[in-house]
Image: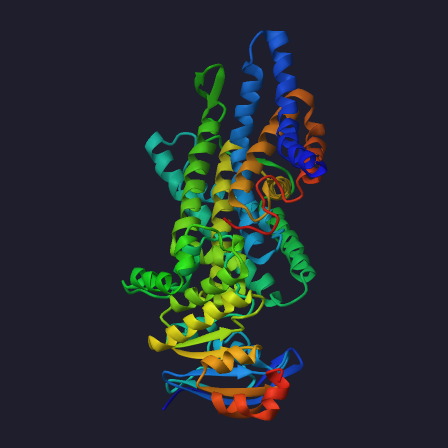
Length: 340
Length: 235
């Protein structure tokens, strides 16, 4: 009896918990405006914001799934992705006066460059700071990860200085493209979905269908058995870091276009949210990380717009704690670790 | 000529020496067994051959090539596949996915045929094709681990403790299948704590004690050896 109650609580209690904010403010909207446009816009902005968090969260969860390490440097890889993207589009001459075709092609090229840079950097971080510690106690690579994170933060500090730097609003991010059932879809929203959705779909297909994706899942579930299948575990781990870094690079470019402000500390902030998203969704679980990112994006938007931005971190983490108490393995996590 | 020659290997876990000079041979077409008590070095010998725990000294020659210091994936490529102790099935993958991973390095087109062959050997696996490995019984997972190793088309199949933690009726079934796999032409090196089963199915056996070979003989003679009977056959 007690067990069933707990089961029900963990299943529906969570859903109820997640619905509290939208329902409360939805009722408020109905009372004040007579429609739900306000909350619908908050949720929509939350999803597009959450899409960027999701892209970063995927990198935490993939790496954790395969070597049980929280790659604290991952947020900084994302930050370097933003910096690289901005530097590169400056280099190829993209600006406010660029033609639409030039802009689209240029940004696609920038996307590739940011993804390649961050992917390669993440692979190097693993080689230098984590691989030599493969057999060491778990705390050792955790500390080198924190160290890597600070090093990269300082690289960012040297690169662009200590204060936020605004960048050209290349896509006129806040312009609304169209309105559907009262929801204003801006160019920034469209961009976030246009980058995230295909990447997440491709990644999921890769992990579930491709030969190397299967090798990744096998290594995540049982590294020793993977070796007995002839899987090169070192290569597979490098591949995981490559993919995680590429996603962070894509997020970096998207963030720069979406927020039109970059600075060295953005990686710490977004990284913390993305890590939280990965844990909330069930660390090691790909779909969980995406779901967690979207949920956190929504909580963040509602809190920013309806409560106060200064309360947002407290509210996000209060949610994290509540979800963990109800479901320690995260929303989609299994009792054991999971990848895929 | 022997397909596998292990010469005086010394293997360590950190500073602890597990093998103190193990020497053994496996001829093409044989089933050879390693018996011995817990900690005698049986599994370590298989781990050394597969490259999971390479020896510090000694040589392991497989079909004329020294593999002692090769990485595991190269050893698998040469045709040595292992069904490890404790089975190590990929718990959250289906039976079919596990079998496909057994053929991970293969590029030829006969993988599907081989899967049918595995299903013929273990009809139970066919019934559970779409089931996650982690939801199956220990005996079924053991079948899966052996079937997965067969999917790599082994020239030498290493089996580590296939009877461990499995209902006796299933153990008999598994041992019948092991004999059948050998009849179909696969050379097998079998590690087993249950010496009754192991000596029943094998041609020759080695008795390991504290990291060295204490005794080597034909399996039927080992069964009649009073020392072996007292120590390993519970007579």
